Length: 112
Length: 113
Image 1 (tube, rainbow over the protein chains, first blue to last red):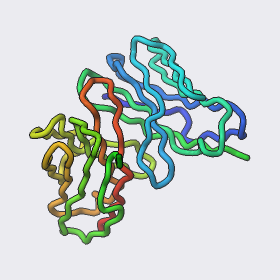
Image 2 (tube, chains in turn orange, blue):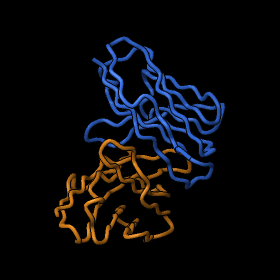
Image 3 (cartoon, each protein chain N blue to C red):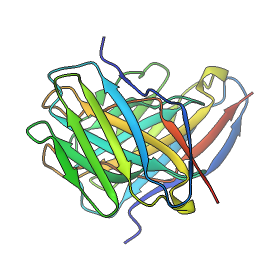
Image 4 (spheres, rainbow over the protein chains, first blue to last red):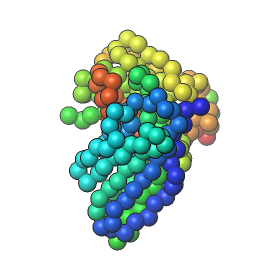
């Protein structure tokens, strides 16, 4: 069935280092992918998205990479800051409809 | 511009009680959604409303009903709450357009005893 999973449930990084959060997706027909950040007690916040016709997209301190060959998505955060500590979710859209399938999340901990 | 507003923020129910979770958005979005989030899991779609006047089931609709009251408001009702419905509920909205991202509310934490 459709699923979106993450390789690492918890990632601990030193402040100032770069972070890489990985995500595997199972539906090769998915055409849109999105990363959300969720801080404790809050709703998910949009970080960055990417369409399937792209393999890289950059934002402010964040980069999303898409490898359709191996159905892999990653989120790179440059110069990780304490405020980046949160749970990060990837999601895929398996068809042209509204639906987003969310992964189970990776917790990012930033050590001072 | 408040975005997506959910009420209440916290609620405790006894098994069998009913309640309605309220959601309103002020971004003039066409589509609205209800998700639930259980510990250690991602979000699962309960119901959605692609546009005013329409509602459809998501992945986990059993035990819930929804009403799209108008373009701004989308409510989720639990007719007879069960402990399995203990969860955090998020409402979200999206503008028309296939790649438009979801905007989420801050959630309602519901406990059913």
